[in-house]
Amino acid sequence: MNNFSNLPSIHYEGPKSTNPFAYRYYDANRLIDGKPMKDHLKFAMSYWHTMCAELTDPFGKATIDRSYGKTEPMEIAKAKADAAFEFMTKLGIEYFCFHDVDIAPEGSSFAEFQDNFHEMVSYIKGLMDQTGIKLLWGTANCFGNPRYMHGAGTSCNADCFAFAAAQIKNALDATIALGGTGYVFWGGREGYETLLNTDMALELDNMARLMKMAVAYGRAHGFTGDFYIEPKPKEPTKHQYDFDASTVLAFLRKYGLEKDFKLNIEANHATLAGHTFQHELCVARINNAFGSIDANQGDMFLGWDTDQFPSNVYDATLCMYEVLKAGGFQTGGLNFDAKVRRPSFRFEDIALAYICGMDTMALGLLKAHALIADGRIDEFVAKRYASYQTGIGKQIIDGTATLESLEQYALNAPEPKMESGCQEYLESVLNNVLFS
Ligand code: XUL
Ligand code: CO
Image (tube, rainbow, N blue to C red):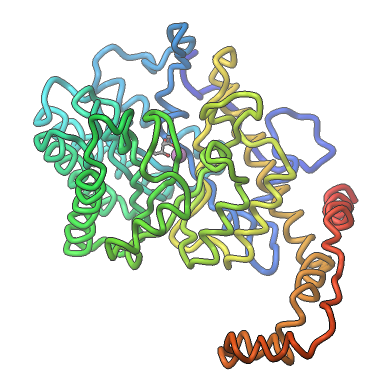
């Protein structure tokens, strides 16, 4: 069997259930602060990993057959789309995300790809109308084709820039036609291998030029959602320009793109950049740039983007804590940019992986909500900075203090009285909330 036709529909059965094909924590309509879990989490299926990935690695061929019982490329594409919507319906996943090349065969020329793509966008529109499943975001894969070996917007070859622009125009048209609320730029090969052959200034200017063209086109053609940049520090290039959230924010501000762009934060990209997932989400949140999430997890012993399904409840809790603090998802949602391991080659393994990921994030939501309701952490943080609410601290915040007035203050004040940071206590509070 190489589809999901034998998969049962997955429902919530509660934490005591041992049925592998059931949710233990994800109870779609349960209200948390008056909002159903499904709207807090806005789960999305990644078309590329879920429907296309053949589980190859540099040492081995495919371990899963993605022909969906067909032989002709367009027949395969349609059977794949049918399987995708069957999968989402059975799991109760309301959104999906896709790259242009995930849904349609590339053929032998861009013109052929464009025809295939248009046909598949209409086909998918039909499936969306039948099922009520929505598009979260679209994107163009401007990294897989050999023409992008030097990058796309940052390619040294202007023709490659033009092909990328053409792909992005079509992917934006599709995102608009399918009602997507986001359009993602993950700079697949927007980076460099060596500065010995690289004009970094021109490459960054060109990357911005491509994004400005996308904004101009999208806004002129009815796209009211958010554009997102998805930061990643390395892989496939040695140095990706969209290194992390802070680097991307500086880029957006330099080129005046910050009003149209938000960030799509991916857990495994955060850890590759030497940050926690929570750190990247927090940087996005405090800069009003929190957009969407690619949920997954890496392996602390491996130095690459392993894109595993999230199973770590501690990280999921701190992720959902940031999401709640940001006021929840607006245009964005929680896309599983995750794939099963190579030996998990059965279609049912994909379903089991989503059940694990969705239950983990649902548990994270419940625990993050409990952490905020518990109040001990928020209370501690508020108290830690209380000195800025009165006296000299208030003058600093209000902007009335100067170096001179602070010098006068320091000359007359006793040595500051220090308080403990209480990290270990706070970690035990977190454990207490997680495991009670
Ligand atoms: C690659 C990655 C991409 C983006 C979409 O690391 O995360 O799949 O999410 O292009
Ligand atoms: Co991603």
